[in-house]
Length: 272
Image (spheres, rainbow, N blue to C red):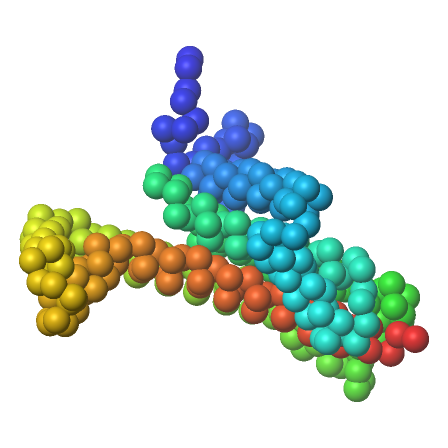
């Protein structure tokens, strides 16, 4: 029997052995969005490497280096010194979340981080990384923090530490999902009023063009303001997409990286 997995929203690979709970389901849309983000990240990384090597004096090279040094300085300012493994990890997380935001601009694709599973995976990964850094800094004595100030608080301390992963996960998921919902609402609004919207825009732009053609030296600014307003309407969907898609993704990527760096700084605070 031929099954087109791309026609399914979810698959249950372990259903044959009785594991049919939603926990064991695989979301095909999320998988496609994730691999699209990874592909985008690899392609952009290769382009950045090519630009730095072959066009060292170009504006694109300057932007790449500026972004690299900004992330590097962020690590130094938060932890107190450059911790290379932490820099690599947080930069990877930052770039992945930003890549998900950009792939959300592609029609028929979405942001992988709008799925709670992806957000939770990122949160757990950051939490595990924080614990690893604490163990590397202090050994097994790192876990003494869980029994301070006395042993009876062990359950509460475990819950408090685990809440870091939940906090980062739900913060990322909630904000990205909220931006996605707003985008869907605005797209629906534009789709329902498609013809009036574009007719009004065309009339405004046409009036501005006629004015600039017949009026010498731009003596009246009335139609100039109209044509500016028409351009705003024409590119309004793009403005909204960039604001609630890309900018929201960049902001959330920065927040997750800052939280991870802060928790790592606290975990290695006694490191010499």
